[in-house]
Length: 469
Image (tube, rainbow, N blue to C red; front, side, top):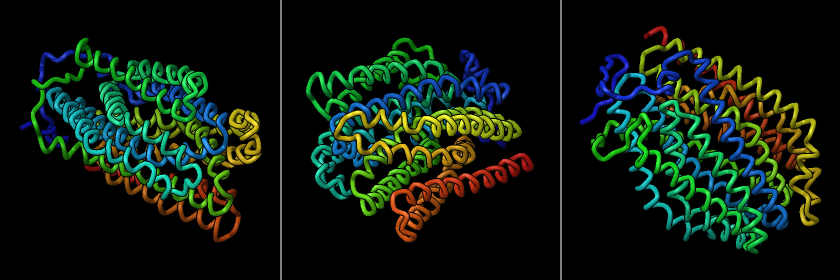
């Protein structure tokens, strides 16, 4: 049975003839250089993906505010799927990078195969129930008259669950071995295809909101084919995915789930807070407030992409450092990633504040949605105070995930979302009566508190690692 290398009792290279790659050399070298080189391609790829999300919202907005709100009511469910795929990917990337750092290639290969088996099991168990329950769930979320549109959109999205899970786990495997460029290529190609397909299917083929969903499915099929070719036909990755390298190991399962489950729950909590925020918005200002939040949050997600991309690099770099017992590199990784993230966040905040009105017009070009423009611009202006406090939180969470402490990362997310953001949004929006604007400021206040707590906790943890190392 395969055993993971213990950082306190390193295991020698189990595959002496394993090919060295530039990615592996990068992971084991200067952390600052690794963060820049790994996060650069991911920023480019994720910006393209987020551009697609914004373009998707723009095309959907042309169908009217009801269609835009319908997407907003499906978004929390979709975030659960994203959470499952990204959480599973985080668990796999953390374990693979730690085993690479400990020079255990066979263990890294085995971890990758285990992660893909999870994809098969989750897809088989969840796809049909989600498709059947879409209508009652969005109705429960308060979709009201938009429930039909939300169901039409959501059922198609959930049909592609296996593709979504597979692609995100495959990206994580590539990142774990330091091969961020190929992940960038395929993610970027998928986004560009999506952008092209949306207007053709929504308006050209007359499919309406369903066309937006089918565009995503088609692009995921293309992406999956490329990834399968790399892993199973070309076979030029450092990690080998093969039945011959597979040995069922409960410790590998526990190690993947030890990070993957908490990371998935983190996205579930994000979905829960999105549902909660939608409910508060409906209670204070109606479904138009949800449409404003849905459109505005697409921009927010776009703005924080560089910080999220850097955090994915942190998992790989800090994980390899942990496996190699080079704990000072973890502190360097944490400090540098936060500094870089805050610098980017300040630039993003300034640009968003300056161009808030122009950005809002993009989502309100049709007569049916034009009345939303002032509120979308106001939302974007408030969120400028949100961005600078994202890096301390996400980079700190990434450090805990990288070192196998998934529960610590989860606790941070619980504090940020369920304690700070939920409480402040309710306090400002409902108790103090500031309405939807109060809810927005509650999100900012919760983010500030959550980021501060996460940073202090991570610094203490890293200091303990160094002291005991």
